[in-house]
Amino acid sequence: MVTFLAGGTGTPKLLDGVDAAFDPTAVTVVANTGDDVELGGHLVCPDLDTVLFAGGGVLDRETWWGIDGDTTATHDELARLAEAAGIGEASGTSRGNGDAVGGPRYLPPDRQTAGRRIARWRRFSGVAEFMEIGDRDRAVHVTRTSLLDEGRTLTEVTRILADAFDLDAELLPMSDDPVATIVHTEEGAMHFQEYWVARRADPTVEDVEFRGSAAAEPTPAVRDALDAPVVIGPSNPVTSVGPIRALPGVDDALAETPVVAVSPFVEDEAFSGPAPALMRGVGLDPSTAGVADAYPFADAFVLDADDGTDLDRPIVRTDTRIDGPDDARRVVRAVADAFEVA
Image (cartoon, rainbow, N blue to C red; front, side):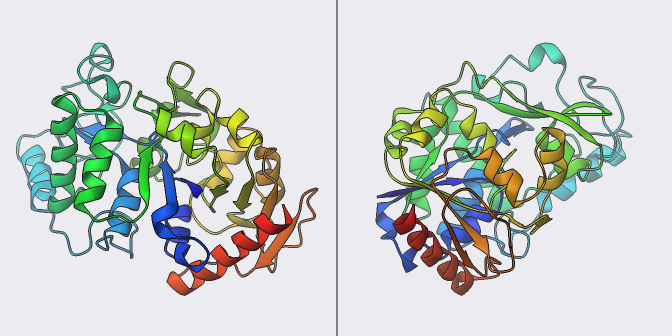
């Protein structure tokens, strides 16, 4: 048994090669849900869905978002309607104002804690939606939300969807409770999806908050999964892995089990994404050394062959760039070797 902590695209890319060293049916994936948003009344779980679609063989691997070959007729019509009604396209911000032009558009503040509890603090209007949602992709969100409205937990719903996509691994949300990743910037506080998707990581980061994490709980299934050896793939330490770690008891569990982490950096160069800006914003050096500081519980690291960082824990080096399944298998074999020396 082995457990992967997944968020963003780094760890899902690594999962492409899991069969190089582990039995895929004995793998559990705990996915970040701090990025989730309720968009136009439908709960969108980006990090769960990346694993779901990748494992189901339908992921758009050019964007690492949504379903390959999906159409966007509903998304396009939402934009047309907003423009025709004079509401405007999704640009800029209009938090808490249902009549303002542009977006992304939060529902009014008093509705941020109304409705579905799981959507708390992250409810966006669907008017001229700021995230492009494909038509088949949207069917997943409609199904997820409807099953939640029937009274099922997010864990139960995820299991149903995983069966529909024939996943080999067990896929778990980190919690059935609401946690929202809020990025505090020089232009104000905003949900991570607004910061990353709508604002293209432009505002300077001053801090990151995992709203609701102190009152949330990792599910019993997640607690059980953290008893197994844990792999932290080359995901963003702040907003991909941070929300999982912010849950009560998770860091303690990681300190008690073997953990191998794959750096998303080559020294001070990140492979992709907003990790450098976010790490600076929370006081971490944006580098492999900073990742090691962020993961004091990690027993060993997998670093790129060109990464000369000297750490105080065992290191296995390989080419850590992942552009396909063969690359992923190479890195997974290095992860297995790192468990041997941890």
